[in-house]
Amino acid sequence: MDLSIGELARRTGVKVPTIRYYEQIGLLPAPPRTEGQQRRYGKAAVARLSFIRHSRELGFEVEAIRTLVSLQDDPDQSCATADQIAKTHLVEVEKRIASLTALRSELQRMVEECACGRVAECRVIETLADSGHRHGRLHDF
Image (cartoon, rainbow, N blue to C red; front, side, top):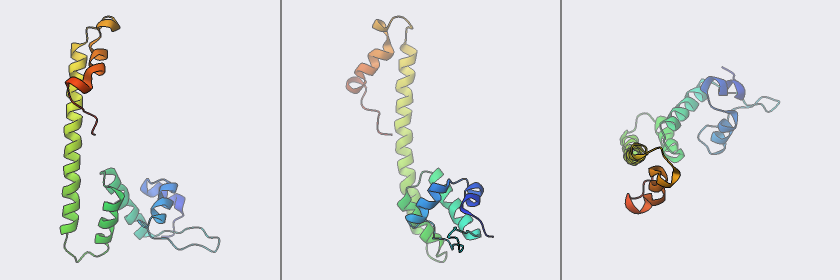
């Protein structure tokens, strides 16, 4: 397999500038180059980039992905570190879900209380003007 960066981008769904960025920060090894200095990628790069893309889609931070990639490169070691990374990420996701659930409840309440009359009597405007005081902060998501 001898893919250009454009073909690698098409096969993996990762944009060319992102591929270059991942190379720059060491998530993706620098590929061999042609005499004309064009990057050339093989199956390993496709697999690695697909792994990184999927990890990003799941919301893992770059440093967590860096650790997961290094674990993947040494498959005989314990997976305790990978488990801990996933557990930590799960806690963060659960916090965001709780925050978004609270946000949804607040928005539903605002809409349900709306009389659809004049702005002077608008519950949406009134609630937004007072949301930080009466209902707590909901912006941590």
